[in-house]
Image (cartoon, rainbow, N blue to C red):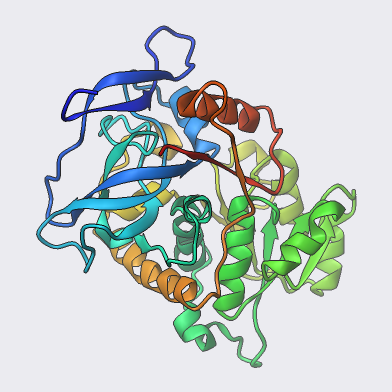
Length: 365
């Protein structure tokens, strides 16, 4: 491979939307004080990695968000990160506003303010599965969407007036974002209850859910409402389908109810106008404009970077003390077709709904 050139996976321009391998992209350069250049060791796959190119195509844009790797050079202000440090985090891949950033690449430039230092005891597979999209989105959901004041370091701020922990419904508890939500909510002084299939109940409870409800049961929403005596005020919908949204609406009580939906909820699904709905977008944590279309567009907002830094510190503390774990990782073999084809196959598996209670990971080195 020529000096200063890398391999990466990019959006195609032939209309098929199947990613293609580029061997002509330049290794990205550090341009800002907080930037670090990372040699990518492994990546994790998310639904956004195939959804973004479909909804906001940008031919030639590098795909991928979650990653782990090693810092190879730094800017002038990089949060104590040094060359050789193992880190994990995320970038805004498939980015129409910055098509040369993406994690499905041999090298990437990341903002050091949102990176987690990887403990020596963690494998690359675990670190990639932690990434950053999950905890970043949950942080926005807790603090901005649900407007809960407490974080793990000041969990007492979330206690109700009667001293009890607030209950939060996590719809889709066995998803990667669902298990992250259960962990961060529990650490922040809340009691997460989760909708799951019966087969995943034990798994999700091991991530902090105090109880689980079978999402396939016709009375799922009513059962939750009965269990919470009509007082449920908070829900994080990690699925955001017509069925999951209906369950959230059925489960929530009357007073001050809020839903954090991890995708856009069309007006036709909104059967309770009094329920406040917010759609947190993890990409906003970088503080810059999110140049996507329609409901996915966001104006620049530096306060989101400040929120991200607060929660990065929280996540780092939890990781350092062994109080946070990644979603169960499933490494896809690079044999016989190679790392890039493994990623493409993994994205097809996600798109076909073939992945359950696992996080797909592919090694790049």
